[in-house]
Image (cartoon, rainbow, N blue to C red; front, top):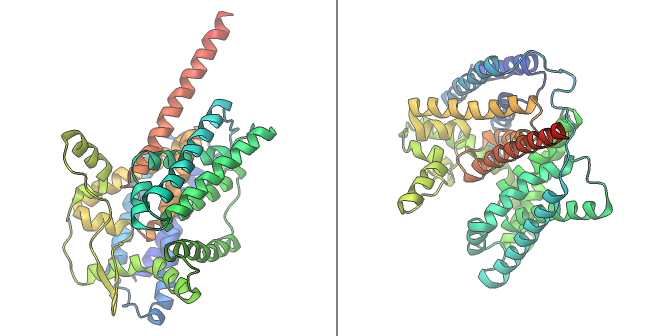
Length: 402
């Protein structure tokens, strides 16, 4: 019954969102459809990989969370969105990148590359924990976040056509990929890849096809192979890669399922759901910063454990009922506000929105919005939007004078 309700709810939200927003690229669709698919995969193959069976009440929590998430977005759209969306090309806009931004981004890419080389030579070998700690914090990490944002601007900018600009463009793109690979965090690579694919599909006004999804799933094997080969220092065994990729896909659903089954405690620490804000306060007060990653390891099979609990699972476990409701409302408002701004032709909101959709696509795995990078993406979008408005106002005043 739980799976049937989830499937029915997902189909209903697909139909409603397509009618309301004129597109399938909506937060609720990108959150619900991948989760439903992974649930089916888990049900079909869990026994083959020695996982415990799915505890169905855990799926009901997702059904309730999805309903609330969609409802909040619908109410927001009623308040802010006019009924004049072009259903054929809802996100269509002409995107340009100023020359100064391209040069600045190239400098940031160069500094990031130099930082990675310095870390590999002076700190620790690529793939080591010390290397990840150095590259995942401080200035180099913030520069990498900027590059992951600006790369979406680059791949769809219409004015990067000269030979010099094309060279700079590919330098920034390759530097961004270089960071993601050497940092060797699978989530970073997958999020980057997904956000680029979504951005291209949205700008070209094309839907994602089944074959492309299959190719994307196959490419995840390659991502795991590269990532673990860097960590191991040699080519990772293919049998290990296949088994670990399957574990990566289903372990979070299995972990949340078992967490609910054993009736483990909830409302553990609501502040972890908004940790960047909490850590900012701690920084101002001179207090030690808290980590974002979960230590809640749960047995998902004999001798198998996982610490990830899916999007709504993490929210429910750490926030409880009322903290969870508040968190879902906040994250739904953010996601749907980015959608509305994107439909209103704000290109900088569109860049953040594509990253948001990429994170929601991985909602079957865990909650990614409690990481500082997503706060920075929104800050970039807001600051660049304000700069764009000021520039237009200045140009309009100058033209008016003369």
